[in-house]
Length: 327
Image (cartoon, rainbow, N blue to C red; front, side, top):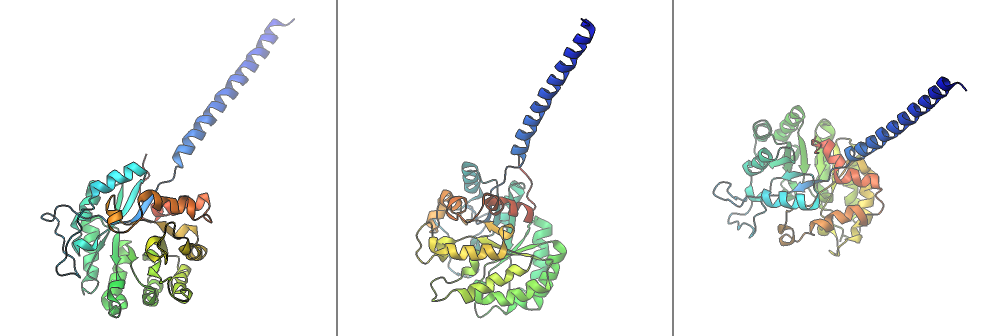
């Protein structure tokens, strides 16, 4: 018997066995790390907050002269507490109309929580210096862009494609701004003109363009929104189903065929999820609570795949607004 050769054989076998075990262990660890790394964010892309300190951050509604502020302040502290409670990683804060054109409160929220928030302000859309105002808020305060609300200017929305807004969109392209539009379906052709001329400006459409689903045939108006899907610089929010639903009853199944049309047109890569109001102010504003808002995408809209849900609930927003990955 060759004892040395036998020992060599055993040693080789032992070495190979230990190496295989070590490799399997490393693979297992890698799998764990990979699973942790690919965990998708949940990003609310439509969140209003407003200050509880009107001395520091005045509440001046631009359309209501004797505006009475809401009884509960929807503060950033309330928002962060709710986010942590329900696993919302980040939010896009959209300036509440209650603060008018003064975006200092939402800018302060961004300063305090730069990794958790992106911010859209408001500018008076009829201001001839609207392009300069965009530049100020983005350069001096780090905002990602602006929200415009033509829906409040029905019949008086010529500014949408007027000279000042051509300058605005040119400036937006230079600054890599994102615009979101609270708009009604009859106004979409005017917006489409600008989208086509300025393909470098990214545009997000709020709340299904508030299509009237109670109309005898909503499809002709809704097609004005669906037509925007041909522009790769346009995204759409799956938001405010509770508002556009004719029944108003959760889970708003009468809106689902319209969500499906939006999904079929834009695809899962250009749809975004959002809610609107933080904490107890949801009920005060007639909105569902956060678990029900999440449930709509996670469960009720059953034509979404699991991959779709990850995109719509967070991954799309993370790319569009360049959110950092949080550990």
